Length: 517
Ligand code: ADP
Image 1 (cartoon, helix red, strand yellow):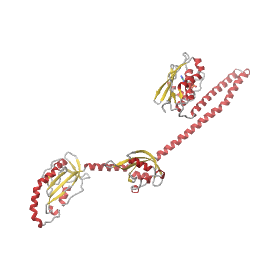
Image 2 (tube, helix red, strand yellow):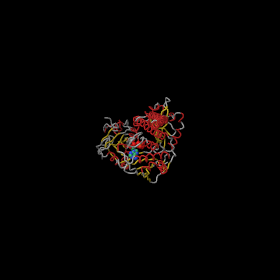
Image 3 (tube, protein in one colour):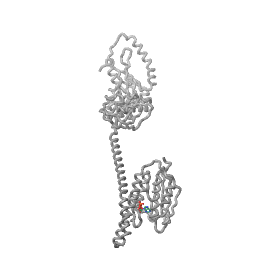
Image 4 (spheres, helix red, strand yellow):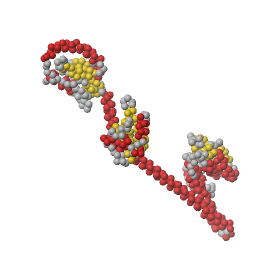
């Protein structure tokens, strides 16, 4: 086996031997001071003789190794167990200190993992250094072990982060404060068509269509102020020229000292979503137009039906008046059916017209009406029915609401008209109108003591031409509540009925309050 002198490649130099004894003495004298100094240092340090046997270690080395090494017995290292960076076991006699002593050279840049007897593992960088006497002969080694666990953890975290960025479906790009691209992930290449090589170092405006270039100074200004820009929907350009709808989230990038040094940009392709939105918009518009046309049709059809129908009614009445004598009993009865059928059809068409008129009335944001006044004029329109039935109508103080006066009057008129019509024969109608605030809306209730509505019909009664009675029992068209619902819903309100059959009903509708806007 080669001696350590030979390993170090040192050959004897007899000329300097004269001073050797002196120097060796000096070294021995200074050794206790040297040890004292080592012991005071915070880094783990130990020394060995030329064969690698431990000669000294400081308290920091004990703490680092998690054990007290045995002098003269432990060789090469203070550690209990060692591993290479890849996790495989590193035999003690191959550790950096062993390599340094065996090969007579300093070892730098190595990294290893030490395991303490309690199982803890610590990453470290060793600095094995050879000690030589005046002749250059290796007299031993000194090694310093620097804990790099934290740095390793940071490195691992950032390489994990880099892997996440790389595998992201969203394009992730960073740029400096001059708008020059610094990093570029695979998804960015997929989205914009440029490779990392092509993009890095280029201005980010590479991705801007010409008519959007003005956005960049504004973005950079906001980034310099430390602002984050979230879900900014804009248009960017693919390498091939195709325009892309993207949603951008741009955040300032900080250096270790918290200074803004650039921006990270996450870009998501929303072309498909935009297309779907456009398609939805188009189909809504088509639906709206179809609906409008249908209303127009219903309106003009019912309008045009009125006149021929009036002729049927008028002439059948004339026949029954003037030619009554010429008809037998059946003829008179049939003519009666024609007359009442025509009358009824007239009523239906009148209500249908009223409904379509309500549905297509223009919206006016500023419309407002006093519910008290609307109620008053509804009541005055119902004077005849009120007198006949002996109805008693009372009300709380009522608010102003956002609806046209004529519509509110129509609402009250239909509801109070029904409350009178659907009364119980044994009791005169008692009707009460009340109002209460519900957020930005008013809840207005019209309560009666009439026949009530069975639970299963409570939704149905608001449908067009939906009736629970025959014309013989109670005359009507089934359009009154449908009109009420149309008026209320046009103003974002709701209408519903609470009822107990035989004890009365309460129709409740909501309309926006005036102060709400
Ligand atoms: P119409 O009164 O012309 O039949 P509406 O649309 O006004 O049409 O009412 C629909 C149905 O709801 C009525 O046929 C009736 O059966 C029921 N209804 C409406 N208001 C009341 C009420 N106040 N009490 C009991 N039933 C009612």
